[in-house]
Length: 232
Image (tube, rainbow, N blue to C red; front, side):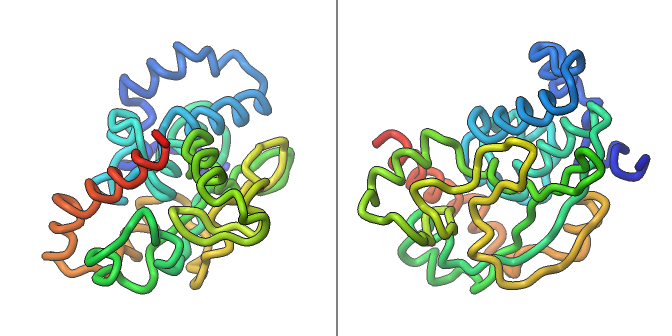
Protein backbone atom coordinates (compact mmCIF):
# COMPACT_ATOMS: atom_id res chain seq x y z
CA UNK A 1 0.00 0.00 0.00
CA UNK A 2 3.00 2.31 0.27
CA UNK A 3 2.68 2.98 -3.47
CA UNK A 4 -0.73 4.56 -2.90
CA UNK A 5 0.30 7.04 -0.20
CA UNK A 6 3.59 8.43 -1.55
CA UNK A 7 4.02 12.06 -2.51
CA UNK A 8 4.61 12.86 -6.19
CA UNK A 9 5.29 16.03 -8.17
CA UNK A 10 1.54 16.63 -8.60
CA UNK A 11 0.49 15.17 -5.26
CA UNK A 12 2.72 17.56 -3.30
CA UNK A 13 0.97 17.09 0.03
CA UNK A 14 3.92 18.30 2.09
CA UNK A 15 3.39 21.78 0.69
CA UNK A 16 2.78 24.28 3.48
CA UNK A 17 -0.69 25.30 2.27
CA UNK A 18 -1.96 21.71 2.21
CA UNK A 19 -0.48 20.94 5.60
CA UNK A 20 -2.00 24.13 7.01
CA UNK A 21 -5.42 23.16 5.64
CA UNK A 22 -5.18 19.74 7.29
CA UNK A 23 -4.24 21.32 10.62
CA UNK A 24 -6.98 23.94 10.44
CA UNK A 25 -9.63 21.32 9.71
CA UNK A 26 -8.22 18.93 12.36
CA UNK A 27 -8.54 16.10 9.84
CA UNK A 28 -5.57 14.13 11.23
CA UNK A 29 -7.44 13.55 14.50
CA UNK A 30 -10.54 12.08 12.85
CA UNK A 31 -11.49 8.51 12.01
CA UNK A 32 -10.79 7.29 8.49
CA UNK A 33 -14.46 7.49 7.60
CA UNK A 34 -14.69 11.07 8.86
CA UNK A 35 -11.52 11.99 7.02
CA UNK A 36 -12.76 10.71 3.67
CA UNK A 37 -16.20 12.27 4.13
CA UNK A 38 -14.91 15.66 5.24
CA UNK A 39 -12.17 15.88 2.62
CA UNK A 40 -14.66 14.77 -0.03
CA UNK A 41 -17.20 17.44 0.95
CA UNK A 42 -14.46 20.06 1.12
CA UNK A 43 -13.18 19.31 -2.38
CA UNK A 44 -16.71 19.06 -3.78
CA UNK A 45 -18.15 22.27 -2.35
CA UNK A 46 -15.34 24.55 -1.16
CA UNK A 47 -13.25 24.03 -4.28
CA UNK A 48 -15.73 25.26 -6.88
CA UNK A 49 -16.27 23.66 -10.26
CA UNK A 50 -14.14 25.55 -12.79
CA UNK A 51 -11.36 25.24 -15.33
CA UNK A 52 -7.68 25.65 -14.39
CA UNK A 53 -4.90 26.55 -16.79
CA UNK A 54 -4.08 22.86 -17.30
CA UNK A 55 -4.89 19.34 -16.09
CA UNK A 56 -1.26 18.87 -15.15
CA UNK A 57 -0.91 21.15 -12.13
CA UNK A 58 0.14 20.49 -8.57
CA UNK A 59 -2.33 19.99 -5.75
CA UNK A 60 -1.09 23.15 -4.03
CA UNK A 61 -1.93 25.18 -7.16
CA UNK A 62 -5.45 23.73 -7.31
CA UNK A 63 -5.88 24.72 -3.67
CA UNK A 64 -4.61 28.23 -4.43
CA UNK A 65 -6.95 28.56 -7.42
CA UNK A 66 -9.93 27.54 -5.29
CA UNK A 67 -11.60 25.83 -8.24
CA UNK A 68 -11.10 22.83 -10.49
CA UNK A 69 -12.58 20.15 -12.71
CA UNK A 70 -12.43 16.35 -12.69
CA UNK A 71 -8.68 16.01 -13.15
CA UNK A 72 -7.50 18.89 -10.99
CA UNK A 73 -9.98 18.38 -8.17
CA UNK A 74 -8.94 14.74 -8.23
CA UNK A 75 -5.30 15.72 -7.80
CA UNK A 76 -6.13 17.81 -4.73
CA UNK A 77 -8.40 15.11 -3.29
CA UNK A 78 -5.69 12.48 -3.70
CA UNK A 79 -3.00 14.69 -2.21
CA UNK A 80 -4.99 15.34 0.97
CA UNK A 81 -5.96 11.69 1.34
CA UNK A 82 -2.35 10.58 0.93
CA UNK A 83 -1.22 13.15 3.46
CA UNK A 84 -3.63 11.39 5.84
CA UNK A 85 -2.18 7.99 4.81
CA UNK A 86 -5.37 6.90 3.03
CA UNK A 87 -4.46 4.83 -0.06
CA UNK A 88 -5.79 6.12 -3.37
CA UNK A 89 -5.11 5.83 -7.08
CA UNK A 90 -6.46 7.30 -10.33
CA UNK A 91 -8.62 5.76 -13.06
CA UNK A 92 -8.36 7.43 -16.46
CA UNK A 93 -10.94 7.83 -19.22
CA UNK A 94 -12.18 10.08 -21.97
CA UNK A 95 -15.61 11.68 -21.95
CA UNK A 96 -17.62 12.99 -24.90
CA UNK A 97 -17.38 16.75 -25.34
CA UNK A 98 -21.19 16.99 -25.25
CA UNK A 99 -20.81 16.78 -21.47
CA UNK A 100 -19.20 20.25 -21.56
CA UNK A 101 -21.82 21.86 -23.81
CA UNK A 102 -23.31 24.85 -22.03
CA UNK A 103 -20.18 25.47 -19.99
CA UNK A 104 -18.44 25.48 -23.37
CA UNK A 105 -20.33 27.09 -26.24
CA UNK A 106 -19.97 28.85 -29.57
CA UNK A 107 -16.77 28.70 -31.60
CA UNK A 108 -14.69 27.13 -28.85
CA UNK A 109 -17.11 24.22 -28.45
CA UNK A 110 -16.82 23.44 -32.15
CA UNK A 111 -13.01 23.62 -32.03
CA UNK A 112 -12.69 21.29 -29.03
CA UNK A 113 -11.84 17.59 -29.54
CA UNK A 114 -14.67 15.05 -29.60
CA UNK A 115 -13.24 13.30 -26.53
CA UNK A 116 -11.83 14.97 -23.43
CA UNK A 117 -9.46 13.46 -20.88
CA UNK A 118 -11.29 12.53 -17.68
CA UNK A 119 -10.48 10.74 -14.44
CA UNK A 120 -11.89 9.72 -11.12
CA UNK A 121 -10.21 8.71 -7.87
CA UNK A 122 -10.30 5.24 -6.38
CA UNK A 123 -10.02 5.14 -2.59
CA UNK A 124 -9.24 2.06 -0.52
CA UNK A 125 -11.72 1.87 2.32
CA UNK A 126 -12.56 -1.22 4.39
CA UNK A 127 -10.51 -3.37 1.99
CA UNK A 128 -12.56 -2.23 -1.01
CA UNK A 129 -11.67 0.20 -3.80
CA UNK A 130 -14.40 2.83 -4.14
CA UNK A 131 -14.92 4.95 -7.27
CA UNK A 132 -15.09 8.61 -6.25
CA UNK A 133 -16.18 11.06 -8.96
CA UNK A 134 -19.02 13.02 -7.36
CA UNK A 135 -16.78 15.79 -6.00
CA UNK A 136 -16.43 17.47 -9.40
CA UNK A 137 -19.56 19.65 -9.27
CA UNK A 138 -20.12 21.88 -6.24
CA UNK A 139 -23.60 21.84 -4.72
CA UNK A 140 -24.40 25.55 -5.28
CA UNK A 141 -23.68 25.14 -9.00
CA UNK A 142 -25.57 21.86 -9.25
CA UNK A 143 -28.58 23.26 -7.41
CA UNK A 144 -28.82 26.23 -9.80
CA UNK A 145 -28.37 23.88 -12.77
CA UNK A 146 -31.17 21.63 -11.50
CA UNK A 147 -33.40 24.67 -11.10
CA UNK A 148 -32.56 25.89 -14.61
CA UNK A 149 -33.57 22.50 -16.02
CA UNK A 150 -36.15 21.51 -13.42
CA UNK A 151 -38.26 19.76 -16.06
CA UNK A 152 -35.48 17.17 -16.43
CA UNK A 153 -35.97 14.27 -14.02
CA UNK A 154 -34.00 11.53 -15.77
CA UNK A 155 -30.79 11.54 -17.77
CA UNK A 156 -28.88 14.78 -18.32
CA UNK A 157 -25.70 15.54 -20.23
CA UNK A 158 -24.19 19.00 -20.41
CA UNK A 159 -22.77 21.87 -18.34
CA UNK A 160 -20.18 19.52 -16.78
CA UNK A 161 -22.72 16.88 -15.72
CA UNK A 162 -23.54 13.45 -17.18
CA UNK A 163 -25.89 11.42 -15.01
CA UNK A 164 -28.92 9.18 -15.40
CA UNK A 165 -30.63 10.80 -12.39
CA UNK A 166 -30.24 14.55 -12.77
CA UNK A 167 -32.37 15.62 -9.81
CA UNK A 168 -30.72 13.14 -7.44
CA UNK A 169 -27.24 12.17 -8.70
CA UNK A 170 -25.04 9.87 -6.63
CA UNK A 171 -22.82 12.60 -5.16
CA UNK A 172 -23.25 12.01 -1.41
CA UNK A 173 -20.52 9.84 0.10
CA UNK A 174 -21.64 7.24 2.64
CA UNK A 175 -19.01 4.54 2.17
CA UNK A 176 -20.16 4.19 -1.45
CA UNK A 177 -19.15 5.00 -5.03
CA UNK A 178 -20.06 8.52 -6.16
CA UNK A 179 -20.58 9.73 -9.73
CA UNK A 180 -21.57 12.88 -11.60
CA UNK A 181 -19.95 12.51 -15.05
CA UNK A 182 -19.82 8.73 -15.48
CA UNK A 183 -22.53 8.57 -18.14
CA UNK A 184 -20.36 10.62 -20.50
CA UNK A 185 -17.45 8.15 -20.56
CA UNK A 186 -16.22 6.94 -23.96
CA UNK A 187 -12.81 5.28 -23.47
CA UNK A 188 -11.37 3.52 -20.41
CA UNK A 189 -7.59 3.84 -20.00
CA UNK A 190 -7.44 1.82 -16.79
CA UNK A 191 -5.89 2.40 -13.37
CA UNK A 192 -2.71 4.33 -12.59
CA UNK A 193 -0.78 4.65 -9.34
CA UNK A 194 -0.79 8.43 -9.54
CA UNK A 195 -1.86 11.29 -11.84
CA UNK A 196 1.73 11.97 -12.87
CA UNK A 197 1.88 8.57 -14.57
CA UNK A 198 -1.55 8.99 -16.16
CA UNK A 199 -0.92 12.44 -17.63
CA UNK A 200 2.52 11.43 -18.90
CA UNK A 201 0.70 9.04 -21.25
CA UNK A 202 -2.66 10.74 -21.84
CA UNK A 203 -3.21 14.45 -22.44
CA UNK A 204 -5.91 16.52 -24.06
CA UNK A 205 -5.92 16.14 -27.84
CA UNK A 206 -5.03 19.76 -28.54
CA UNK A 207 -2.32 21.28 -30.68
CA UNK A 208 0.25 23.53 -29.01
CA UNK A 209 -1.61 26.59 -30.32
CA UNK A 210 -4.99 25.34 -29.09
CA UNK A 211 -3.49 24.64 -25.64
CA UNK A 212 -2.40 28.27 -25.44
CA UNK A 213 -5.81 29.50 -26.62
CA UNK A 214 -7.52 27.29 -24.03
CA UNK A 215 -5.28 28.50 -21.20
CA UNK A 216 -5.41 32.19 -22.14
CA UNK A 217 -8.96 32.58 -23.50
CA UNK A 218 -11.30 29.58 -23.57
CA UNK A 219 -11.15 28.52 -19.95
CA UNK A 220 -11.95 32.06 -18.80
CA UNK A 221 -15.04 32.08 -21.03
CA UNK A 222 -16.04 28.70 -19.60
CA UNK A 223 -15.50 29.89 -16.03
CA UNK A 224 -17.65 32.93 -16.77
CA UNK A 225 -20.46 30.67 -18.01
CA UNK A 226 -20.18 28.50 -14.87
CA UNK A 227 -20.19 31.57 -12.58
CA UNK A 228 -23.27 32.95 -14.30
CA UNK A 229 -25.17 29.73 -13.60
CA UNK A 230 -23.93 29.51 -10.01
CA UNK A 231 -24.98 33.09 -9.34
CA UNK A 232 -28.39 32.51 -10.89
